[in-house]
Length: 385
Image (cartoon, rainbow, N blue to C red; front, side, top):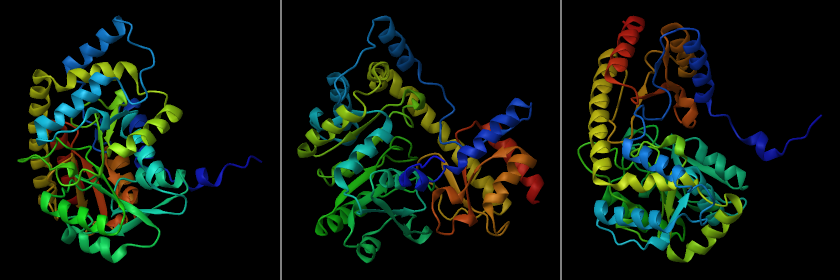
């Protein structure tokens, strides 16, 4: 009998992956599955980015880079903060990483000791707490509802702070709810965490995918915060596995040392491709896609509400609708499997995102086109009418 480590045994599965695997099997059998489960844009990588990647391969730019990323990409990211947020960020504070997951692992490893906790909202992205378990720390899940904007508030942070709490992880916009922490609230949260001597880490992966406004970066109110971001969502480069973190100047050597040991360097071709992500022609493409996501959101939210799903807050960002289906079932996990097998709609059960009222909710991802969303609504209407 093989004895696996306790930490591996404690890492929970990402339930949507089992659903997605079955959805792919149904696709292969010839079924017409509407895919609304994965958090992956359906648009291909923008042509200027793809061409830059191809050119990098042709030019032989395929060897290791510095662990913190190529200098020109770090500079380009820093300049992007100036253009979008009016911030003057030193390129040296930008650490390019192997996806935002690589960034989160290194930030948590830098800030949390074994036995310590990071406070985060329930519901929230499930892998966050698994990263903490990997380094012998743990996630401290705080239940949030629509009355809290599905986000931690200064009051909740004060009420739930423990001796073991090392810091706070926010996501704005958030997965699965699409909720956003606005500037005034970010300032108050920063002050609360600072007064407790904790660290503030903010997941800004869905910046660029807010509708009707641009989200505030925490760096506008707190230069000591740690920011996580990615080329996957707004920039549409999921499979290129490239992200970044902006860290305080005194944390740069610590993060870089971890990067050297854990990852050697970020993916080389992806870095050269990403240089094209900030070109005006690329931004124009991405902004047109942002408008398409807004149209999809509006269609899906209206359709779900018409069918009787409760969507307590219209999502302000990301590409998810977190819908309360408690009037339809007392077990959305089973319902999601039924929707897949019987109606050929792939969606994600709330149990993937925490425990607070999780079995009442379903996450619908609008990363598929208008025609597919309309098809899903027809199928849902057939089932629930």
